[in-house]
Length: 313
Ligand code: FO1
Image (cartoon, rainbow, N blue to C red):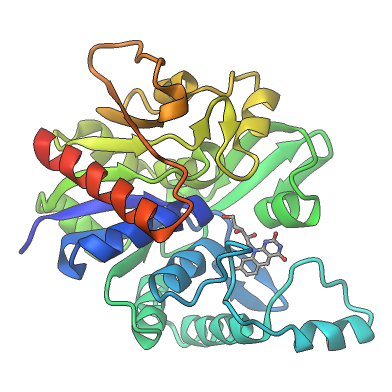
């Protein structure tokens, strides 16, 4: 069996690099392992936002403006729900709704989330393998000054406004990682790991909260590279820097290096942070354009990350 790269992804930031990687790495040489801490049940439907963001992006069906959902979407169901007086704080587009209906149906039939994701992905023409971090629920719960909120309440309903005090990953101790991932870990089939520039606290840490995955990453000798989600003390996108400040962490690339210090060999930082230095000799910073504003930049960053991993392997 071909050795593979393992890419840890959250939503929008993760999907951008996943896109670049998918354009240069054949399907049998990479696994996209995706956060499911954002998953929740809404209108009795199983919603997996990050799995869908990665899947739609690799299928080139994603809405590049919003960063989530499908392009050329319509919202007729929402209009009628509003007529019925339903609170539509979480917006499901008409086409996107089909994904959630089908996922819910297949899960109700007893299929595992990884098999459901494979079936949905293949139907949309995605050949690369997208795996959920867990087959069963691990929920990101954000403890804030306004109380404990499930991820989508914090992120969408309250627009990340509440002040974050702590983040918990409920269910992590009983998480069931996909059998295929377990097999690849046990048979030493990974050649390197890329931690995509997703929010470390909301998107990557839920994956790392699963003991089997964390232990593998801590104990492995294969190279692990992360891309900073911070440029010049600010988030590339989303609430990363705001959350860091609220948790009394300086939003810098050094703090990101510190956060992943137990795991990574390399942190890729932006040109704007070129003067920053790692605190230990065991880690290297490499400078690149990490903003990824177009396809060429996504592919270029992916190419450079892969080259670095190959060099270290
Ligand atoms: N994000 C929003 O800001 N508002 C929404 O109404 C919304 C709906 C939504 C529906 C399906 C889906 O897959 C994603 C959706 N997202 C929405 C994005 C989602 O909240 C975030 O992208 C991730 O959970 C964070 O990575």
